[in-house]
Image (tube, rainbow, N blue to C red; front, top):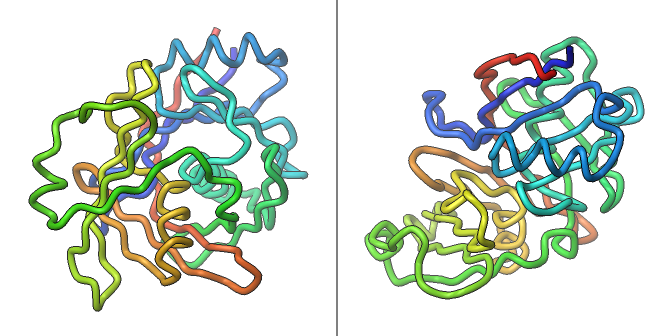
Length: 225
């Protein structure tokens, strides 16, 4: 039997919110892409991670319908889990490239690049109320990242994420890659409040890199046959 760790990633300050994530630490139990895609579809999380080599940080990420080269909340969650289990890492290696990891008390950070986070279209609305009033999903096609300033001087934004890709994820509770892309567009650190109660923190770095960080909570450990 293989264990599945279920986490909530990018929780709010009080531990609420957070985007569910499944992590299969023994990736060899599901060695083929078809097997991994089938499990991700069955679990129904916005992403599921397969850890192929914990020591090297080699990971593989799937939505219910696609394999991803990079994604924020799976990498933050996996980095946190490895530390929680006594094996912290300095780097994770998804297909996009080497992702630096750092731990800062209750926050776990990963470092990515805007070119790894394409395909999520940020659209600014005039007010937080307009973002909150959007139906789930809004009309249209393609990944929509709706946002508005909650406090521009403080860098705080209100966001909602709508994959609109035809699977069972109608609204994404917390989306690190989209927050990274928005940070790149605005060129400043952000305090992102997404979904029902999630918080994502971002920090631009030299050379075009962007740190994405947040809190993680372990929800459950399941057995997979």
